[in-house]
Image 1: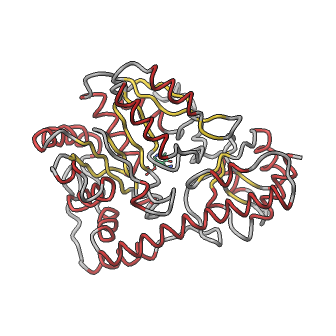
Image 2 (image 1 turned 135 degrees about the vertical axis):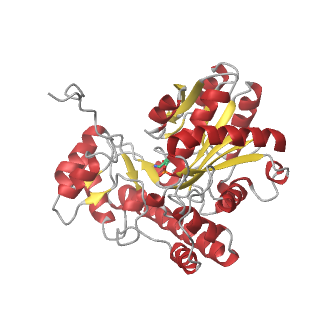
Image 3 (image 1 turned 45 degrees about the horizontal axis):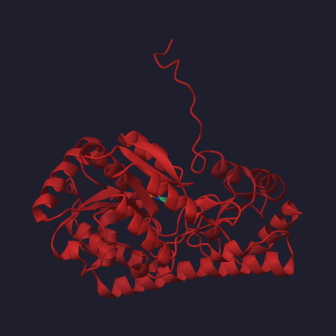
Length: 397
Ligand code: PMP
């Protein structure tokens, strides 16, 4: 008998596990649509490799780099440029040399490093508040990092928008100096972001209640299509950056964790502790993706080309939002109010469809999405949006 005979089967991951992706793969209907996974798809429904990324990859290949290990905190030129992108070249913490940065295994790895660092070194609290709902992986990431996970109100089902009063009340009521996770932009799964004015109020509460903000920035560039407009700063913060979505480097696993220290001396001490956390986890990060990202960030021509490409991805998504809204509201006169589809931001839309609707859509229309009614807008294109709209209309009627 095996020593592992008693290992119980765990549930599959709701997105990457067999639920959606496997059902989609097994479906042989030519009309099938996968709106589950949050990866950009082009107008033909195909994965998209950015032209700036292809050129960056050529530049890297032409330089015939060796395959030596990176340092524990990664490719220094890349992390410097990633911080510049997030905080702004003229930002005070960058100019004063107070930002501690480590290359990470994409955004997830950055969250995990940050969670572990805070669990070990944040002196005031071991509790992190997540928006409800949040990206499904946040809870296990922070729990496994050694933090206690609680939630603050975020989404209002009735308005399909932000529950701003609930959010403010919960952040005010949180024990002083708690850690709070904030989606920097393009909130996943709801697509609902605070406005600029609401951000200011959140910032005030964070100051009043001395909360420590941990920003998850997995979609920089996707909210407005502009890289710089999406960044947000102003406090002593932790930040998880991902280049999965905005550079389409998903499987290359390129990201960064950073923390704004008080001064260069504190930064150096934080650096040393990040190394102590990372070394036993995976020793040092992979080199290839960081070279690609850096080739773009460090080269003005490629950087400009990349900005245009991010904008075109964001614009295609926005045009799908408009098309879907028009179709449901004007063409099909589908029951319900669909304005949120246009208002929501980033890659996802929280449609308001129920679990029963999503079941019906999979069974009857070969359309796959998460049970919470979230759709990846990038999965829609001019060829499949009619089928989607008509199927939603039928499911709701
Ligand atoms: N945070 C959020 C909110 C996300 O949606 C994602 C990706 N779905 C991530 C972090 C991490 O993604 P990755 O590890 O691929 O960068």
